[in-house]
Image (cartoon, rainbow, N blue to C red; front, side, top):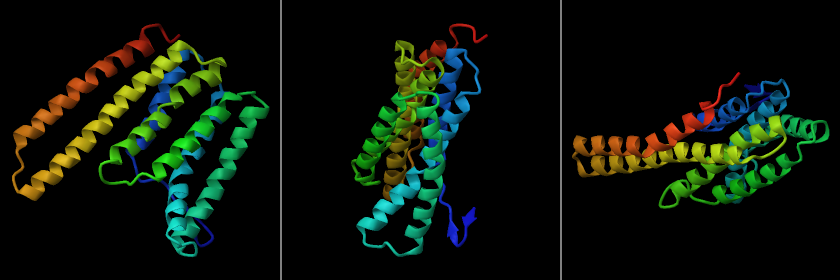
Amino acid sequence: MKIGRQKLIVTNEHGSWAVLFVPMLTGILSTKIFSITILPFFFLVLFSFMLYKPAEIMCHEWSAGRRKNQKFQNALVSFLYYGLFAAGFLVYEILFLQKYLLLAFGAAAVIIFLLSVNIKSSGAFKFLREFLGVIILTSTAPIAIYCLENRISDDALTLWFLNFLFFSSGACYVNFFNRKTFRYKREGHPEEENFLKSDSSYLSFSIEPLSSFVLHCFSRPIF
């Protein structure tokens, strides 16, 4: 999509969409409350998430002194475009629905963004960057519960923790798999047996939070 000569930026990190919306869905299902009032929150989360990539590009281009190139201009227009919608839905949540705790979650998201944008996307700290991302993205579970029940319960925090365990285990596996792949290609021997071991390690690491996650969401009837 383009606005004038500027091209809107959309994140190409496809896995992050699941980390964003699956916890939100589990939070909604766990409340057994199906209300149209959740829609403003859904769009608030959507446009806030889409702000991330343009903001990251702007920070990198600004620090490199490239504030007049096309990449920076595209990021700036995308940031303003998404930010307009995000601000509108936030104002609606605060003024009309009195969801003041969203301001605290928003502030936490900004702090985590500033931390992650200063962490190199490669090297020893790459996983820390993804770890911070999983923390804030899976927070859509307790926030969805808060928007529907107007409170943060112990169940909401537990659901957040289970979502975090599940998706962080996936991040662990992807990083481990990529390091293995890079090393095997560099050394010239694939060692398929080790790949199978890494797969089984990932499954054994994920099965406990996944089973707890399912039991927590569906231990009581939805209707």
